Image (spheres, rainbow, N blue to C red):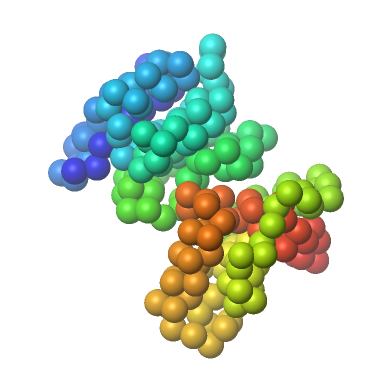
Length: 221
């Protein structure tokens, strides 16, 4: 059973999501919160598998709540999915940087919401290759110099290569095709890279590839 906590300041949104998710045999909504501080308390109490987190809320907003939840060792297995009105909300990139595992627009199709919860609960990031490319391209326009404190020295040459391809938005299957290896091998390289760099999932690996300078602004040109 996948347990879910819904965080949104609109009761109608929470109610709609709850009704949809509770109707699934493998998903249970274990709590609701209308602002970030309550969400943090409930997360620690309930340790849900997935938190659907709105960004704009009174009091502690979704960005701060996400940061505090994903940095809490007690909640290391809890995944946060950002809920946004637009597919490139100005706060989405910062939310991914602080530990969110992906995002969904609020008017997403019901089937996509259900699939997203299952994908994230299974340990994958909720970022399609197309969305990843769009996201990185958007923020690359405002790029600064790479962070000097981001070190990739622990990675092998192949792992750096794989990380760059993840940063460009390629799926494991696409990486496998590009490098002439099996999808299982590509997945193993991605997993080892995440372990070495101490990132939670693929979403943070994309951000780190960008911030370290491994994926340079303008790579889409």
